[in-house]
Length: 131
Image 1 (cartoon, rainbow, N blue to C red):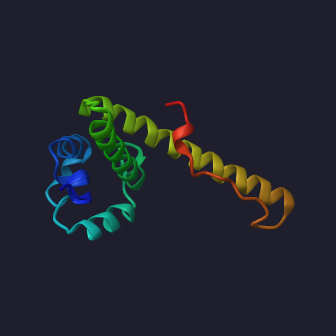
Image 2: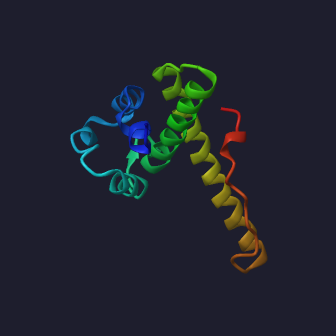
């Protein structure tokens, strides 16, 4: 039986993806924690990698690993790691640019209204982006 640790870290496909994307400066210590600490540490890591926020890349990788595993199990569809990596980086860029745009929009709207918290943006569905 597979568990989340297998899907996200131990299966060959996941390891290939991580080996390609994780910067060499992070590789030595990358898997040195239990799953919970590993997730918490990387989601909270405030590092920029190739112009992208690491925590965004990290979460997008997890989402794509889960998606690929589902496609493999339920639809017998195999993805090549290099195709997924390109998709991951495009998604991370789209989220980062959307996040910047959302912050700018909120700041602009709040300045016009002279009170903070008057507008809320729904930013949960990044899969709707065409990347």
